[in-house]
Length: 379
Image (cartoon, helix red, strand yellow):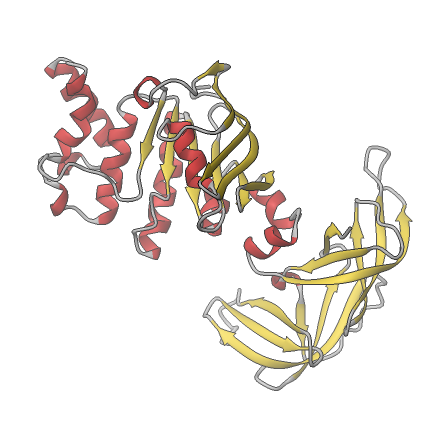
């Protein structure tokens, strides 16, 4: 496996009265595509700059493959950075931009020609070698920046919001290309983004950050399906999130001896009533918790479901706003004067010409207790 393990231990960084990073610890595995995800100002770019050597932390440790690199200058670390604004030399051709670091090392003309050709091929820019940056599209400029960063053969590639200047369709295309490049060269990628879909699409694992803290680390599936905090639940995708009180807790029989215990919990939601949810975390009767259900897991119908299953939650409401988006319709359903729930219905079939549920329709919402999630237990 190429790349380096990156271990961050207790790193803190302040700028005056502002705390950018608060005792952050993190282990990134060799060859992993790892994303730092969070809103603007959460500390993700500061952490990336510390890994690159552009910033020094106030405290903490940073090792690459077990070696302390905190006191090494950026050019001595086995890292390279792809910036948001590309940082290309406007007076140099694509070939010379990519060759720049090799020229600094006094590489032979043969080595320069061969290696630049190899990396231009990797990013599919062989036919653009003699163009200047102002003759390229945004996506092409970004690929030049990636080739220039990779030609030094770093162990870790740092990507600081590299796609934010591109339009939505081009971002999706470049994401696929980035993932393909990562698969081909196999080094460690650390990717900074505020875009949840980008992080979920390409990451092996990701860390969700807010206000200088890491709130959760996990695979995209773990982060989306099992958010650790209210903030993570709200920030990753769309959800219905509310406080509730546990009124009944029953231990469920395990499916096998190796399964961890699971509990069926009855929740009392203010202004809504009783909701059933399963959880692997032991919850005590009377505890205040956060409950979430993703909108795509809710079934919306005009007719009352006939199921007798005890794990099915059932609510009735009025469609306050249907938003048709072609591949799906998002419904805002008013359950009470204080509670409106989001529901997403996918349009998977050709015959599904549009929503048969319309504004002001009376509807039923149903979902399984196994699809809801207790996000956190309140103190």
